[in-house]
Image 1 (cartoon, rainbow, N blue to C red):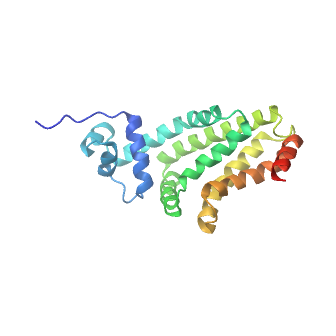
Image 2: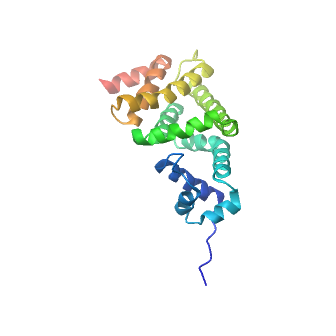
Image 3: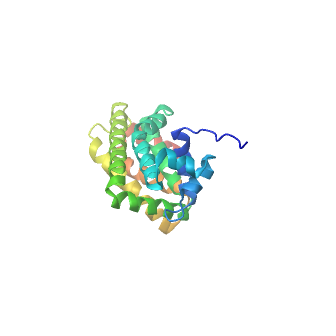
Length: 207
């Protein structure tokens, strides 16, 4: 008698899907590769999700729904809203552990942008992220870390756009790590908005 196939939660399957996507580009990714990563059979995935496209759409939907949870988890680890912003930038650097890995992620992004079914989940994820960034910026203003005249909406859009572009420029220049590159971008954008006490604190540390 063959051993009974173990069950895996959707979250476990999605985590395995993410790991497989980090190793393989869209043309290389198969249900068999995802199943092997999850410790399942390809047939089990077909029964649960249908095609590879259906599985990837379910994965995209789960990622969009979990955007708030991800950012809230980062925020919970930091008493300072600005520290949480920098931690978010560090988390984004996980998309680029190497230039080759970033190229694979960009290949998946092409699908997300071009395919309307994938794009709706990507848009939901980006909107949730921007709203969370705006809230963090507002909290930083209220905490006296950022100047009172800082515009949360404008700064959130600037951070979002700058960091998305920074991943690409890092892959071109390949100076330092992706994390250091992104944090430098964040710090340069935040610098004009820092409250005077925060600027003095940074100056003292840098002297």
